[in-house]
Image (spheres, rainbow, N blue to C red):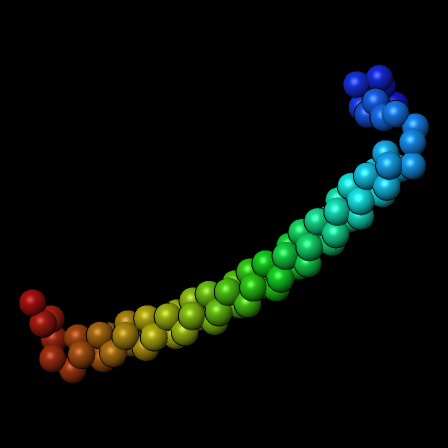
Length: 80
């Protein structure tokens, strides 16, 4: 550990209490950030699955539309 990473703390019971509170706050903050990241990952996966589902649906609709256009061209000749 380098010198700049260390905090200069006077060795007293009050300083010990303050360091314990800082450690507890940092651990709680880390835990909250981890929970938030997990929730965002879950939401991202839900959105991604919805996008894939919609993409597949659009592909099916486009296939059906192309087939209908081919049927119309065959039945009526060139529409233009």
